[in-house]
Length: 286
Image (tube, rainbow, N blue to C red; front, side, top):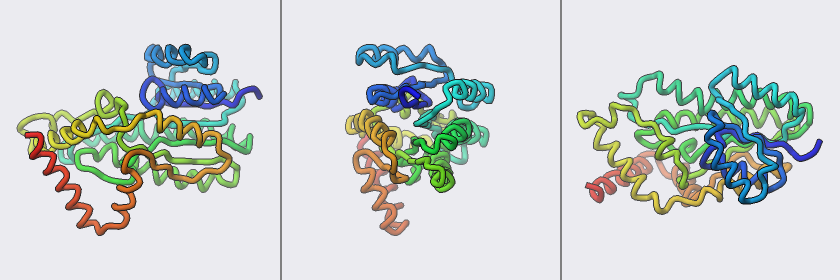
């Protein structure tokens, strides 16, 4: 059987890149996938610096492409083994509901949910036959807490959370673990190059223009306090080697507290806190 095999989607940057390195460092044979393998140079460079480049293979995978998914299926059939799947590929769609074309929601779900499901379906038969395996879905605090201007991303993560609950219960009898990692704000590019804001919300004649500026100002103002993404990669590494794990793993500064407060406080109180936070940010950024 050789080394245990781990598949990581969205490995060209952020959590995916660091997770690929983390798993390789733990002795896994890592199949690091990304839409454009030419963007794998940073991963290759860091792997060589750490002396673990022999443990990492870069493969092309577009989770929204049926042909690409079939290519992954053929690869896995040739390997005959999958021990860990880290579903990390995704992006953050932003904007306000009134101004977001329904097609933008579809695109968000194609990557963040349907593509993830397609990859998982390819892996499940191998894991089921093995009688073991770890599936780690990268969710977000946005899968537990809604925020204005982020409905495409939030909706996709809420859907992922519910789907993962179902999958975990279905896979339990087969010895397969399913876990959700729910990061807060970290120093990755999902809020810069990875965030896609609808055009209308960026125009000054939009009724939501000022609110969007406040939200982006809030994110920018707190950027210096974002956590080190290696913390998330290390957590994923730990989960990948656990025979038994809990479903949800919130991680990051104030993440657990925020979830507890939202679950404990009356909605009207939680709502006032959220609105006040944005208004306070507005007065400091104008």
